[in-house]
Length: 125
Image (tube, rainbow, N blue to C red; front, side, top):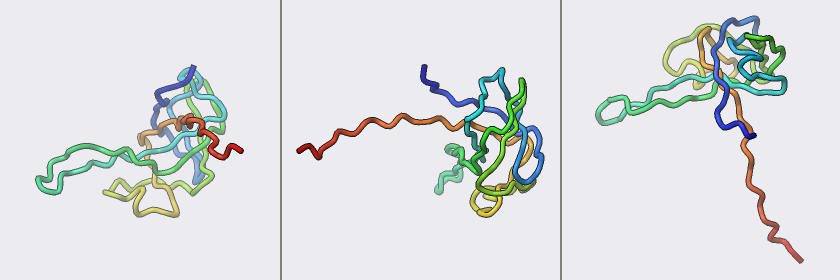
């Protein structure tokens, strides 16, 4: 059966500049080999009215499962070091290209593999 909804959790603890703990584990369906991302929720405002018209979930950093326990999972970053702090507007993803700024409570979302449709071979002889 194909998984259609990603597993979601939150950052529970930052261990060091490459690893953190999230508040979901085996009982929530987390297994080795899964990939997650920490996201920032960015409000979008109408340029004419300044009214909030929606929100965008924007990935900050991709993380990989290092250890899975019953109720927690340790994730690690291959891409860039993690820093704690920085709740300001656009502080996470847009201004921090060399480091991922994360905080306890930040949303964590499983990356789902998307099955790409098979392309027909148009080079038949």
